[in-house]
Image 1 (cartoon, rainbow, N blue to C red):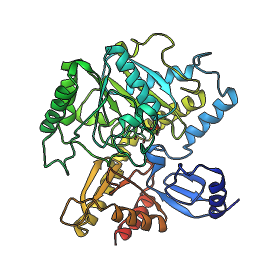
Image 2 (cartoon, helix red, strand yellow):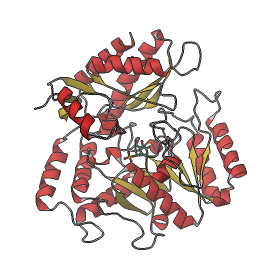
Image 3 (tube, rainbow, N blue to C red):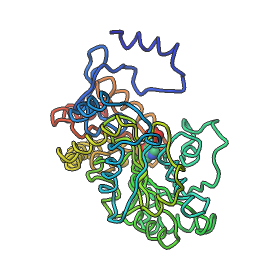
Length: 423
Ligand SMILES: Cc1ncc(COP(=O)(O)O)c(C=O)c1O
């Protein structure tokens, strides 16, 4: 097997430079809470492929279901010749997502595609054009989702012009908004919409219940419920982007569940299918079914192999109670991070929920972001064999997203590395 160094050379001559990687090690195999590279080195995985392998890499049920499906058929296109597993995934999503009302789902390939389709559905159903999004939001890299995403570099820089009718309003960011309550932060956002857009022009309000790429920003309690209430009164479709937060990651099936917020539409991807590409929009039947026949779809959306993987992943989440596992992992992680924060004044805040946790690094005694410190701690983690990620508008947030099947021993070893990396 070629070494990482050899592969890196080949990559330089074959793969576009615009596609980056966090580490230079190339993967041979992965499972549980570890990844083994082609040089035989084992890494503790605190990334889960960016919150995707919640059930672990090559989870046994997923492998069996994929094998069985691949042998039966690999693709017919649901829009041409449909099959049961697509219907079964939609049934599961309709039952699992918040809200006891009648729902429908449609399946796609990527998170960005799900978000694009949620906007299409909301616009079609309301007959209104505008979409409201938030500071620090991340919704993808396609043309519409670049417009919905806040951060310029690296996601948008020189890729415009972007789609229109997208309006950005302030987020609730407790560390950085002077301690506004959830209700106050919501009132600020709503006032911006009403003054600058007009509620009657708004098709959808799109929000990550806990922001992902933007820095694991957890809004103040009451922010999401207040926005939900306003959207209902204004006839605006409330879309929760649960692409990073979904499928047990935050210690419940979905992050909206924590405050009992019930979205009209939910976008789903990442953790849905144990690593196979699948995404969905799930929501109120009357909105979803407002779209004419043939208005939604795509060649690969709801591919049968990905659907088999999703059904097996969801079964695994039930069987292993991965929501409880996320709460347990989160408690262990948070304890250790708070202990580090008590001695390291660069840590302004430990935040997140369940197994979606982060620390925000600043220059001590200020709120001035310190991306160099985040990069240095990351580099120390990588050198010691712990795969971690950074995020945040200012690039100063270290985030931790272990697979929810990580063992206690793997978690402890990862935390020891992390603790030492701060030193
Ligand atoms: C909240 C959120 N929405 C949308 C996306 C885009 O998903 P994808 O990369 O599958 O297009 C992401 C990916 O990180 C995400 O975190």
